Length: 162
View 1: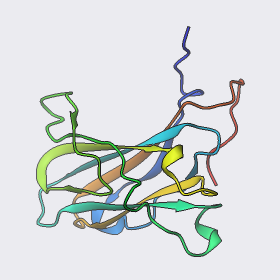
View 2: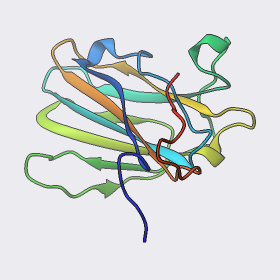
View 3: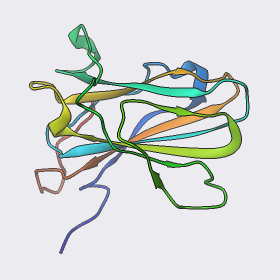
């Protein structure tokens, strides 16, 4: 039997709710060291004139304190799913694998999911953080990470938070 629980697939708060224009590189860092990967879930609502661009996923050796932090780049593209009509449907639509996604400004709550496989990270890197640009001061965004495939099946898995 496969156990599915918040202990084996923890959902981790990354940022928000906050103004989408202020998100930038303020999301928390998480470690994929003990996981196969992580989903990054972004929820945004607001119909003001600036799109929110999910424009990079940083990878790190330790976390934000380690100096130069490269973003995933060509050859490290990841799967993306969207639900741009969350008030009327629960259907997720697979997009072409990419490194970025732009959320258009509409009044309907929108959700975007990235899947970052630990195997896609540069050798020696095990930490990730979502970075954004654009957005609007009155549009609201929240970000969560969900670890997938934790390698240590124990009552309390090792923490993934810095």
